[in-house]
Length: 543
Image 1 (cartoon, rainbow, N blue to C red):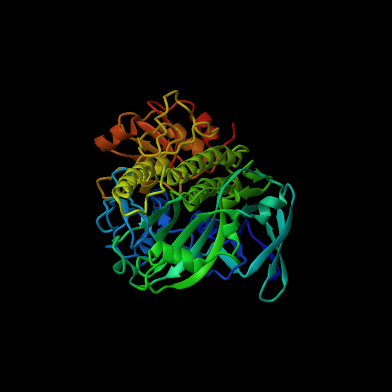
Image 2 (spheres, helix red, strand yellow):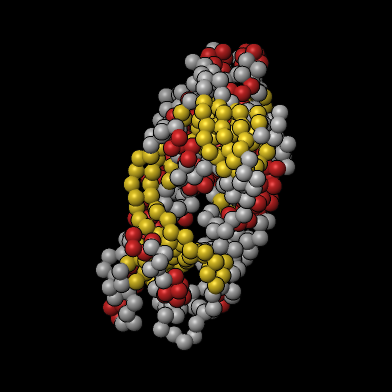
C-alpha cells in the first residue's frame, strides 16, 4: 500500500482534544486508526482550561492522569471567583475556592478536576496517542471530501506540505472537526439551536499581574459596569498568560473597529491612570456563543463526536468534557462492530445515549451564561458612594449565588445516565433526581457505576474499561454465573467475572450481581441471573 493510498479501520478528522482522545481510546482497545489534522498541532489560542472530573477519570483509564496533574499549572494558585468592577476597582463579592493542592478529591470519584490549558493538554494527549502503535496522526493534512457505501468510506485528503492528494479507505469516519464541521455538512446533518451572544477573546501576556492589583489571585475575574456584566478575565497558565473575554454586540466582533487595548485597560482598571500595567496582546479571536445540537449523530458510517455534534456556552467548561464522554461511549461500540460481536443496534445506541446528554449539558451551560446577565439596576455599581456600595453588595451576592452551580456541578459531571438506552436493561426502579449540583450514586441501569475505594487501594472504576465486568457480591449465589460467562464467550465478547467480598461496596452497589459495560456504565443488575443469553444479546445491541 503506497503512502498515497491508506487503509485503516477508522479515520478521524480533526486533531483537537476530542479527536486525539478518540485516537487514544481506540488504541487502548487495540483498534487501528488514522487521524488527519489541518494544523501542525500547535495551539495559538487555547480555549480549554478546565478538565472536569469525568474527563480526569478517562485520563486515569488511559494512563495519562499524572501527566495532566503535573502539566505545570501551579498547585498553590488560588482558584477563587471574583466579581468586581476592574482589577484595580471595586469588589462586589468573592466565591472562595482553594488551590489545587488544598482541594480535596471528592468522595464520589478517584479524581478531582484539574486546570490544564489546552496549549499544555494537547501535547500531553498527542504524546499519549503517538505512544500507542495503533494510532497514526497526520498533521498538515486537509480533509477534502469522501464517499461512503455499505462496505466502507473512501476519503480524499491533501498533504498541505507537498500538495499531494491521498486516498484513505476506512470502515468508519469520525467527525471530530469542530463546530463548523466539513464532514457534518457533507452528510447533510443540520444543527438546531440559537445564537446566544457575540464575544471576543483576547489572549494576553501580563507578567506578575496578580501582584499589580488589589483583587488577589483568582481563577476568573468577572467584570460588572453600569451596563451590567461586560466581560471576564480567566487565568491560563497561573503565571503570565490570561484570556480576556469581552461580551458584546455584532459590532464588537468587527476586528477593524474593536479596540483591544481599551478593553484590557478597562479590565485592569487603568483607563484613567498613569500607573499602567504592562501587557502584550498575543491573539484576538472573535467567536459566537451558541447552543446548537445536531439533529442526529450518525449518517451511515459517519459519526459526529464533540463540537461537530453540539456547541454550548463555555460557562461551566462542558464542551470538551462532553466530547470526551462521547469518545468513551463510542469507543467500545466501534470495537464491537469491528471485531464482529456487535448487534445492529449497538452503534445506533450512540445517538440514542449521547444526544440527550448533550442537550442536558447545553441547557446547563446556557443557564450559567444567563446567570452572568443577572445584574439588575447596575447603573451605580462603579460609584464610590453609599448607593454604589449597596448596589455592589446586592449584585455581588446575586451573581455569587446564581453562578455557584457553574463551579459546583458534580451531578452534571458524573450523574448523567442513559435512561432510555436500548442496550441497558431497566429494572423498574425510579430514577434518581437529575440535579446538576448533587450526585447520588446508584447502579440503576444506564448510570455510571459508582466509585469506591477497594481494599487494595484501587478504585472500583479501575476495574472497568477493557471488558464487560460482572461484579458478584455474594459468594453463595453462583447459579447463573456460568451461563452468563458462556453467553459472552459464545459471542467472543470481552468479559470478566470479579468477586468482591467488601460489604460497604456491596451496599453501595445495591444488588448481588451488577453487569458493567466497558465504558463504566451499568448495563444490568439483579438478585439472580436468569436468561443470560437475552441479557448478553441486549447489551450487545442484538435485540
